[in-house]
Image (cartoon, rainbow, N blue to C red; front, side, top):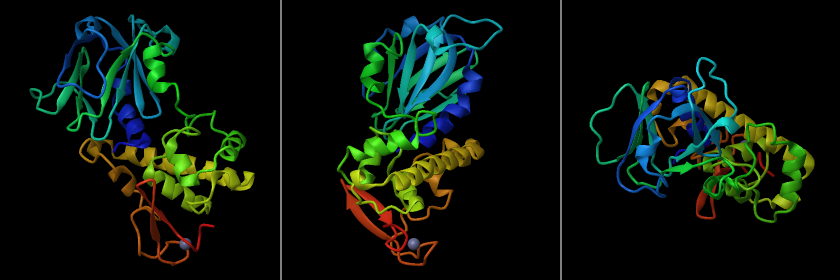
Length: 284
Ligand SMILES: [Zn+2]
């Protein structure tokens, strides 16, 4: 499943190239998780102002062509497309694509190339919203926690949020209410780096430990983005969890193998139907 770093790497792969492009047409394939919400023909003639990311959504801002000066404030957009890759989606932006295959469910043809969504399982979506504060957008973005790599993610607020939650820390991270984008691999890895046992109740984590976890979350995600960015060319073929595996996980998927720090065997447990990997020697 594409996680936040993969979505950010996807954004970086085409955002610069599509900014300023005028939409020529939009084509829908089979139904995705949610309907587009607008007649695709009405997208033609609009200009792509830029592409932002919020959690695992890509926000394609549309509006009037700003001319030579490409800078814009998202508030100037007069609509946006919210793209989600679901379980199996991938986006490719190219001068042209072959005729759409059975899993190509959205094409946005522009003056600079065609953005295509391929999604075999169709849990992904492309949704139109008239603005970021519109009900259409708020329904998808309204409950997201803060961005892990943004300025609003700070240790004190994170700790205050943890204090209110009694669930195991691993599940609190995965829930995405305090901070978005810490998927299954990243949660195991960040907890290892912070030395925190995954079953620890979130409310019992001290400010010092919360501060270490805050730094670990940022570190793990930022390195994954960086690594993905350096292998962009292979990215569309290497989707899913491979982006992180290139980083050499400390614990994820290493059950029974020696911890890279202390040598104890890495253990696996299941929390909320998701596998968690940890080291009893390093995580308390
Ligand atoms: Zn260890």
